Image (cartoon, rainbow over the protein chains, first blue to last red):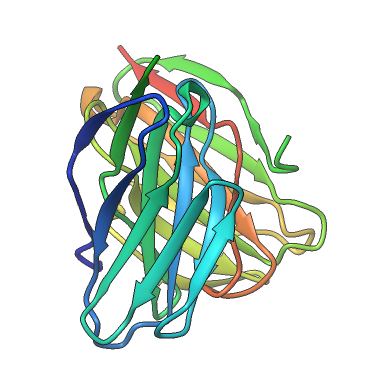
Length: 110
Length: 113
């Protein structure tokens, strides 16, 4: 099982501010990096899947970057809104296993 | 709605019993993943199937087993249940391998009493 780590565990951000957080994963035998958004009482929903070093993906105010050589990915939220409050999970896959980090819980204060 | 259906949504059973959790993947998806989320824990990978074949195993106990049927639905069997098996069990499906996003079901909440 891959050791996927996310930091920080939680963060609070003021509405309108931008924020970012990190996912670290083993760079050897890398295949793919996933980001999911998980709201309370719901199931995780995919944001991005990235496979190539240097990949950058964007969906609205949320974007992500990938560095496979050093084994990290950043997720950015621009102009945070209360509806962005959720736990953001990253997952790294190799050899058919998709292993999740513990998540970063984002709370946006109005 | 992700298109992944898990049944039942809730299950309460006694220690020592056996239960079966069912997952119907999105139409056309060949991969099925099973995850366990215990209290204050993240998603723990249990097992993955692709087109009926087991492809990867995680931290799955010997008391647990799974299979994927020809119609691609999957079942997770949990036996000799212990209190510590109480958790939320998620199934996710994807069209192919790790390069495709996974779609999660709503989960089955298992409570062992």
